[in-house]
Image (cartoon, rainbow, N blue to C red):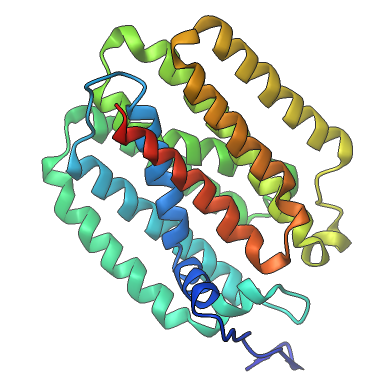
Length: 276
């Protein structure tokens, strides 16, 4: 496999089954789906007794697979000798990515007739937002602006099941929790960018210490405010704080474990759906 006439490093191989499974799930974005669905169920669980409809969750998961695998296909086209092993996996599995994208599109289409009107409206808005995001990528959206736009779109999408299920009286705490997740998502993307510094270094697109610190401070202030205004959810805010710490310290992990740790820590938030 060659890129711009330069021999590209082969896809990495691991002899450890657990790591191999993590990388396989990551290649087709199933770890991202787990993180999104777990976070969505976390939001739904803010109101006791509320449950998310299966069609809404299925369409959300399908939408995530489509968006992220398309993004990975774009990454695969742009792969160069400095890219990370993760991006080489995308480049070496383009057909698999395309297959998952087609399958996810089918699942999403099948679930559409069963969605409530709120999901249609919110989903259409998020879909339009994602179209703008991809157009932005094509015309040069990069760096902090790209990460901010991606984090906002991610949090908006995973909020849809909760918006469909929540009574109007609980919308305030949902909006706050979704905003906190958006900030955690931004920290997550900043950590990813720092780990993959070699790929972005020459364009000066890495998050600086001031921006990084400001994002972490925003998360701390937001979590403090959430605890003051909604103390009944203190345990959940503590869980978000723990996940936020994981996102901040992702840069201390070995490079190939950064993405799995970031996504699966978010997926663990879904455990709150079991306690109501």
